[in-house]
Length: 70
Image (tube, rainbow, N blue to C red; front, top):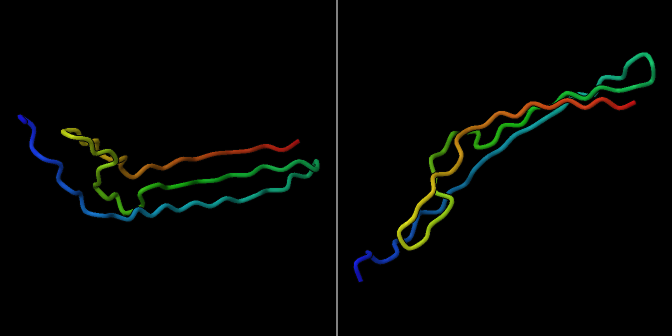
């Protein structure tokens, strides 16, 4: 075969964190603010391994969100 044999990849762990805060508004409504961070340590890793194909994993990512309840 012209392809090299499959090579095992080392195991890895990823850490994510998130939190939110709910504000009660004077009119009985609520506003929730939140944030999430994925890959907190910005670990370099591979998410997909096929015969000759590796795909790098996502870097550290910050997501912000809001929610308004009425």
